[in-house]
Image (cartoon, rainbow, N blue to C red; front, top):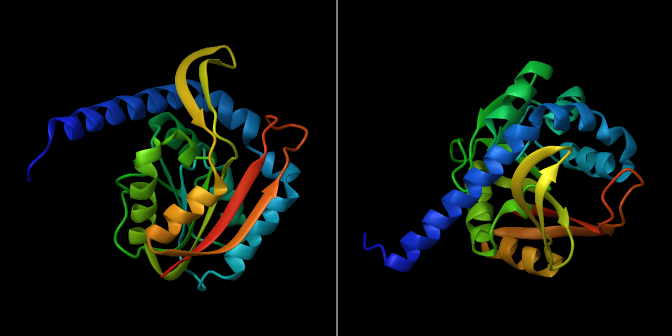
Amino acid sequence: MLIRMGDQAARTEHLADHAAVRVSYDTVAEEYATRLHDELDGKPLDRALLTALLEQTEPAGPVADLGCGPGHVAAWLAAQGARTVGIDLSAGMVAEGRRRFPEVEFREGDLLELPAKDGEFASAVALYTIIHLGPEELIRAFTEAHRVLRPSGLLLVAFHMGAEVRHLDEWWGHDVDVDFRFLDPARIAELLEEAGFAVEMRMERTHYAAEAETRRAYLLARRG
């Protein structure tokens, strides 16, 4: 395969970006898990969407939490009776998840190369995880999600709305190096459809009192 120098340079840059995200989340993993372990208790709309996803998931079908962090969403899904697999880039987050939620299976892996077999999952969620990808990486992430889902499997995606990039070099008193990219729902819907999904639901909401002051979007898409 011919690799152009520009392509190789871009791949090197992406690997460096992902490494910075990984190290940043490793650094805050314990505090992140402690602070956010019960965040769904205060998010009724999120719980309703997750419930709707489960109601449309084939019985006993495994559910993937892509970019699961310390696994609190995967654990909530498991508490509703789902068999869940959490996948995260950060080894620190995966370790926190395994320690706190033994009922969930955890795997370390990248959204662009998911550690999963073709058609392994009946449905999947990706909540505030694509915000760490570069614009040119989104289609690859959605193509990977399509690969690991079964035909007619659902994918629930959530992200901050907008066009800005917020950079953090300090997070809860820890030194980090991570970007949070705000995204256009219409563009995300286009990319999902390009990857082979049909978008069935779009929802927007403002932030809850305990959240960062951003507007959030949710898309529910079905694999073709």
